[in-house]
Image (cartoon, rainbow, N blue to C red):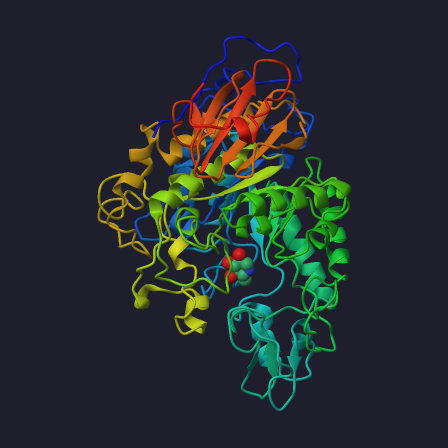
Length: 592
Ligand code: NOJ
C-alpha cells in the first residue's frame, strides 16, 4: 500500500481557501517548539473554540503504557508517551476513569472522584500530566460518572450501615418490597435490583457493584458540581459524562411502555436531565477558558440528542449513530446527513467516532458480513476478513477526518489493532461477559495493552522483567507496534499521522460547510469549500478521478489514478470550485 500525498505547486489566491498541503508541516511540526493551545483566548490562531473541531484521543490508562512494570498501564506511562501523542497530532486526551475503584466495571465503579487509583499513580502526577500535555498543545478531558458509584463508595457503605428508612439511603434507590420492585433490567443483564441483607432492594442499571444515585437528592447535585470544579480547578479542559441519558428516573418506578414516546421512558432521556446539564454548563462557563461538557448519550433519535446540545447545555456528544453504522454508502450518507441536520439548529458541532472502549475494534467489525455495531448482536467467532476490515477502517478514518466537527480516536485505532477474541475465560473481567454467562463476549477484546515495540509480548507495553500485562497482547502483533509502523509510510499509523496533519491544515478552508455531490450510486462524495472534495468508493468498480483534481491523500493505493473499492480520497481542484467526480456513465477503469 502506498499513501499518496501530493504537494501542490501553486499557492491559493484566497485566504479562505487552503488546499496547499505544504502548510501541513507548518501546522504541527513535531520538532517545533510547543505551540500555545489553539482556540484559547490567548492563542488567536483560530477564531473557533478549540472543541468545535478538535481531535480527541481516548486514553484507556490501564492499557496504554506501563512505566512501573506491574503489568498495568499508569500515568507515568502516559507522560512518557506524550511526544507520541503530539506527533500523532491530537488536540486533547480523554482519560477513561482514573479514580480509585474495585474494578467491578474496570473503573466505572468509583470510590473517590477526587483521587487517582494507586495502580495509576497520584493526584500530583495527574496534575503534572495535565500541565505537561498542555505544554505540548494538548488539553485533558476526564471522565465523570454521575449515574452510579461503587458499592464501596463511602455513601453506599453509609447507606448500608444506616439501614432502611435512613437519610443515607435516600441518596440511592432503595425499596422495601417482597421481590424486585419492578422488572427493570440491568444493561449488563439480569434484574436491575439487588437485595441487601436487611431485605431492601437497591437499583443498579449496570452491575450490582454500581448502585444508581438518586438525582432528586440535593446532595447528589452538590457533590457532582463540586467534583466538576475540583477537576476544572486543576486545569482539565472538560469532562466526558458517562451514561449521561440515564441519571434521572421516574420516581414511580413504572415499567417502560413497549414503544415509549420521546421523554416517556422511566429511566432514559428524561426531560429533567436538562436542568442538571444547564447547571453544569453554568459552572463550565464560569472559567476564563471555558470548560467543555461531552455527553455519552446513546439515543436513537438525532433530534432528541441535539436537545442536550442547546447553547446552555452540553458542548458536544458522541455520535453513536455513525459509530454503529454499517460500511454501506447509503447508510453512512443518511447518518452523516441526519447528524448534520440535527446539530445545525442548536449550532453544535457534530462528532465523528468509529471506536471506543466499549465496541468491537473497527478492523474486525468492518471485516464481517454485518459491519454495523450493536451490543445485542455481538458474538465471538464471527467470520472476519481482517484485510478487508483494515482497508475499510482506513477509508472510514479518512472519511471521519474530512467531516466537519470534532473527531475521536480510541487508542490502538491508529494502529489498526483487531479485536482480541481468544482471551482465556479466567483472564476476562468484563461484567458484560460475566453476567451473560459468556454469551456476550464483553469488551475485554478491545482493551488489550498497546504494542509499542519489539517482536514479542508485551511489545514494549512494560519494560523487561515486568509482571505480565493484565491482558496479553496476541503474539502476532509484532507488525502492529508503534515502532514497526512509524517508519512504514503505508501503515495505519502513518495514515492517521498524515491525515490528521492534513486535517489540521483545513484544506477545505475555514468553516467550510459540507455539500453532498452526486458521484454515482456506489460513491459517497461531498465537497467542502471551493476546492475540496472527499470521495469514498464502496463499489467493486474503480472510480475515475476528475482530470483537474489533485489527490491530497488516499486511504489505499489508487489503481492507475482510479479509486478502488473501500477507498477514500481527498481531492483538491486547481480551479476555485470543488471538483465534481465523473458522473456514473463516465466512471471507468482508466486512470487519468
Ligand atoms: C458507559 C461506559 O463507556 C462503559 O464502559 C461503562 O461500563 C458504563 N457506561 C457504565 O458506567
